[in-house]
Length: 339
Image (spheres, rainbow, N blue to C red):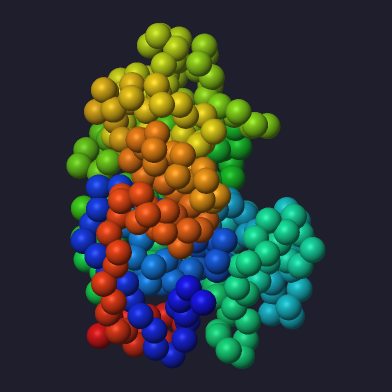
């Protein structure tokens, strides 16, 4: 077994920050329930460089960690053990107490999501308390309690310009996020990413020291960018005005990182981005052969649902060092803390 992250005691792997960025997507949802404190604790135990996560806002203005703008019906069960009915309640319409009342420790059996991640470890009572949708502050507290002083958070703002009533408008969203990071004295350990570039422009104006990560998707059912037109996602920026180049457009917009879907990148695009002083961090890559190919292409980081496989390939390729081992003890049920 590769590791036992939720035993009464286990090993926390720690290493200096590496230039190549190993990011655990939603905490590593290929292994543990996504965007939970338990998943983030396990990812810390694997020695990732960055915890990638998503944030939404509740009715009472609390930042919570959720990929969906709604309580996910494939994850959330009520007090009676019943999964919520699709499409699930909007976070922005529910108070924190209700949002955190759901158990999100097991994917709905038989769902497409369950079939996608058959190796995910469900966290079921009585062995573990039911995982709840955490607040962003709880994740920051977990990182501090782990003793890891170098791991970063890559925080995605979950709002959709085509569905403006499903999340706070960008000004309020960014204000809530930056105010929390400042209050927690954590601005130096985050990146802020989004497909909705409006929020990134606001972050750049208000907190220029925080790196902004421009997410893009060119292929698939719902692309967010086009090379010959501005879209609702790109805050008025049109790649056609910049030679049809996404890296050049993002550089002009003021981004620090280009984060494209991994099948949208080529060696030439990676080289172009680097010439523009942009880092390239691709999403979401889970197969070892794809991870190896992208490392060889020269990307600066990879976001993966399987951070264990990502780290193994990175070590094999010489882009990460084998990790030292430090004994830790559990900080409450299922959560580790460094001795």
